[in-house]
Image 1: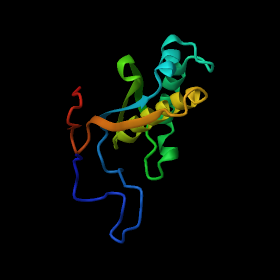
Image 2 (image 1 turned 180 degrees about the vertical axis):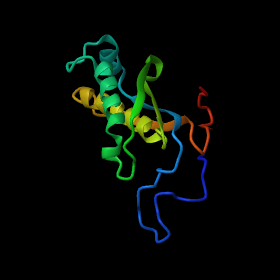
Image 3 (image 1 turned 30 degrees about the horizontal axis):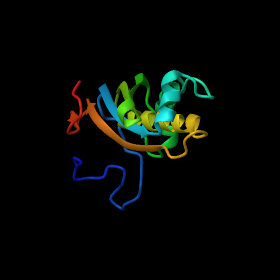
Image 4 (image 1 turned 45 degrees about the vertical axis):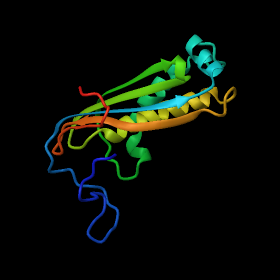
Length: 167
């Protein structure tokens, strides 16, 4: 279930796409947290957990890739504003019983627009990096459940997804 608003802000009255003007908005502290998961064979997870994957430290490299992804978001998403991030954190949880790695990314800024896209991009890029580093041994990995858990700051206030965590 998603929370909706009445207006799509990236379209003008004629239905043409445009970048939203945030020039008159106040700079405030903004935080977003996103999550996602990658499911794999137990043997693949064992390689990741033991640090013996052929390409090296999978989670360490995926963490750096996620941070880089957050920083490059405005270059990847056409109508996303370039913003000065003040913090990006990418964390992993290995769920042995589910043969899954969960990625959670937090993005923060003090600015005129939110950081939801940066948090979501960080998660996607981190999970794609895990896939890339392990695809030689497991092409059946599945990335799923990528979602915004929460966002805070700005005119629209806070959003916490059902089952999300609150800061």
